Image (tube, rainbow, N blue to C red):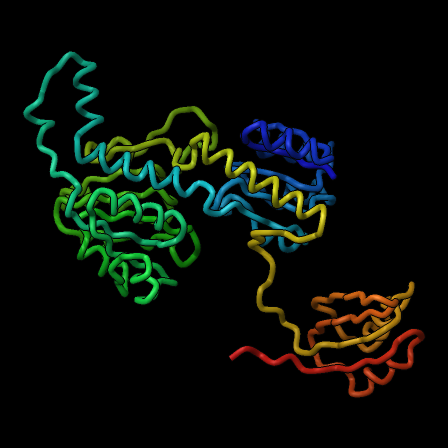
Length: 403
């Protein structure tokens, strides 16, 4: 099985996969047309990426591709619809960089509170200005608001506890009971979090529901002089609303992500947010620690190894969870060549489409096939299947929807 690593990962990923018998190429500079050309010339079964975009053109160029692994949590750089249309699994590595992102979140917060960046710039310019930079508020006792309580949000909460900061949180899945377990105050809405917070930190995945979520209503609910932090995705925040809040509400912001970031690792970057005097920024490096990258590399290898060895795709993000199947055809049969082919042939002749199926083998030569289909089969189909050679019994049952 061929694996193309088209992004920068620790070399340990390549050596581990090669030792496990995979044919591996590491080409971290590939992207766009060069990636498409490489896939066409060297058809891979698995593609591993981090920030590199994967589009329908890459899938068209490589019919052998069966799995795309994103070396991180988000998958917004991968065309999920195109992958699903091509029957290509997409998996990610959630939680493996959570500690790294949480650490950078506090690095930005401390840099803002203690005027670290501007103080360092003045020192390098030969200026001593202790009076201006000694006016820090401190973190102990100040309320940290969290939007998102996934693995990263939980790591941030732990570090907030070490700083003596109470936490109020919201996420779509957070309940009052779960909030109590995590030791945070529950908020029913993002605006409610903002109203209670001295510092607001965003840890949400970018989805159609969260795009532009942090806008005027949330930023306007923050008290004057609050701190806003975003180490998740730039698209979660309404950029114009944030610029307005920086100017009109005396907010300070610590940002690791920006709209219209360059696709290349280096180059010019003209960003009003990055240039704003009340912003401390970093270069979308939240997950970029050696510890995090090793953990991501190990998780990517684990996913790929299982894909080859047992056909399971761990952390799959584009498999349909709620099947359209309405009925299940259950066939007990002898474990012999051609039995399932004849059963599927009978389903095809009846115009019944298969959604999912599994075939379990028993000791002694018997097996049971469970075939989920998308419509009600003809009433006599079970009896017809039961007459096929080497079929022991057949039945058709409706699938009960979960309440």
